Image (tube, chains in turn cyan, blue, green, purple):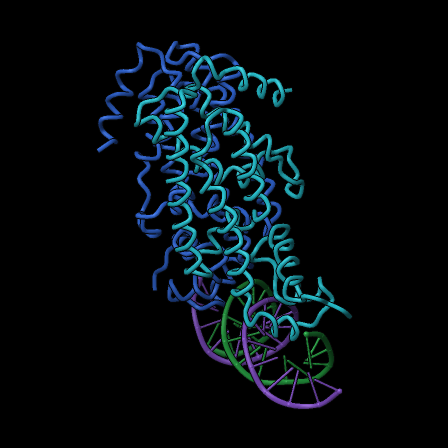
Length: 210
Length: 210
DNA sequence: GTCTATATGCGGATAGAC
DNA sequence: GTCTATCCGCATATAGAC
């Protein structure tokens, strides 16, 4: 067996299983079985389940932080739509994080702390984004309204994919549609969009309603 | 020991522990220890943990269904504020349900189904509520906007209390403020509120910002 | 690096005495 | 109704051979 990088394969399999069946429901035995290796071998690479979760969480942080860094360069509705789309894709790729956050924070308090810090960073990025949109004349809102809009956007990007599973008609296993989620988030912004920027919004509305 | 109703005490203690520490983290042993009774005694009253969860979930359903039934009698902003307040109080009293929904649905699939059904009912109630507000002239919105508003309200009431724990500065154990949550939800409606109904909204804004 | 075998503990659930 | 004692299974984690 070549197994160029068993460690990486363990991480990939763990991520897939956590996303599909939940952090609490997936044991280290199950991960090992999925890969066709022994539990002892898995333990050689990761001395504890927490270390696997920790590593995956770090990748999630890195990916969101990258998106946060570029969020102040959003200048138009289609920039916003793309930014939301990319964010929902990232959250969907690591969907176990927010979906199982209560369990994660209770089982691994250190990760709960980091999740709070990440949320704080997301809030700052969203505020910068809203201010950039106001400055660009894409939306018209008071400072207070922009602040609330930023909070709504973070709330929505954080929780929407979890909520979606509660809406009947959607199979829990069925993969999410980041485009639809992004469109939903845009409706929050919709009331504040200036007349000049409505065109793209109407285009998206036509695309996602029906 | 009198213990007029050990069964009820078990339910109360379970609810408190589930809310405080999470459904997954609380074992039947822990519940028994909290009450100072033996695990065997607990098993006499509830043959399985699932039956405890089931009973609590039913009470949650009953409470929300009661609120849903009266949601079409909302005719003004202060009615809406009260309705939201009562709903957040109910969800907060059984906060483990939505906070640990992923675990709950995976561990007890039947309850996952019922949660979906409850969400469907909440959506219908919210739509009726929005239509009543439009009819009463409290808000001005197209049918499509009213539909989206209803979805946003259900999303927010369902997930807000879970999200709140992710915002730094709030102790996870600290109890939620239903008033603040209700105010947050009102900001979703705010852009659509007609001029005649703005007074109460401004009053609430003054009350909760500062 | 990978395996087999095993230690240790906990959670759910049960049997039977009081 | 309540207790003590116990079984069973699973999950994390370890030891030591290959």
